[in-house]
Length: 107
Image (cartoon, rainbow, N blue to C red):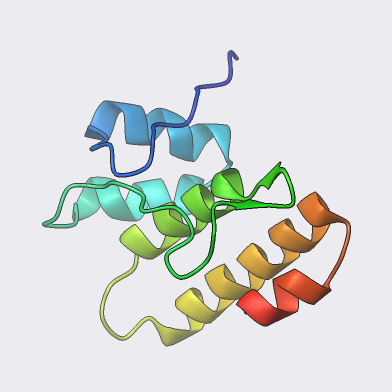
């Protein structure tokens, strides 16, 4: 499987591309939920919402994009799922930066 390049910040993403991205990231259960009940708003990632998309020359955008995909698939009342997505973002950022300091601050 050829990896799909991530869309740019704030670029709208159509459902066929989203399906491929969910498959690429192994988010099969989330895709099944979207397929049954697509969110009303189209998907686009704003990157790291309250944080720079790059930290000391390292891009955090892939981790932020994945986090945005998980949040977009969320629905009201899914507080646990959102907490898990936030924790996974923290872990992804810690891995990318090889440090927990920024990741914990973002969390």
